[in-house]
Amino acid sequence: MAQVIQLKDGSLHTVLGEQDILSLVEEKLGMEVRQVLEEFLFEHSEDAEYIADLEKEAEEKKRHYISVMGVLREQSEIIAGLIVQEEIDRCSLSKASGIIGTTTGREVNRQ
Image (cartoon, rainbow, N blue to C red):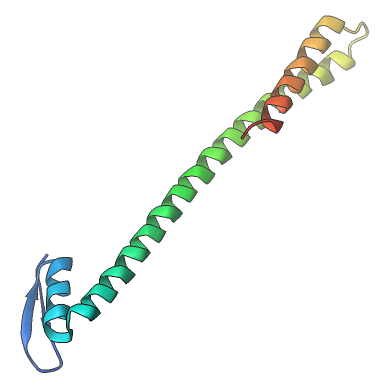
């Protein structure tokens, strides 16, 4: 979107984008100031990209954590149900505790 800006000297300039601003900075303040500004903008752009990547990774880890906790809760409920029965079904109890062991082992060794 085009914008018209007025500089301190009263001159008006139409700016269509980032390159127009950088060209204006170079014209009025010199190439060195333009380069410093470009470095500053690029550095912040990289930071924003890095932060976005970290947020995405954190969200994926959160979803994974919730999934793992769901599996563990399900198996612990199965064990709780088996324990209160008069006759303990050792096979089912072993299976549920095996799933818990496998799940926790996988998570501990996850990189």
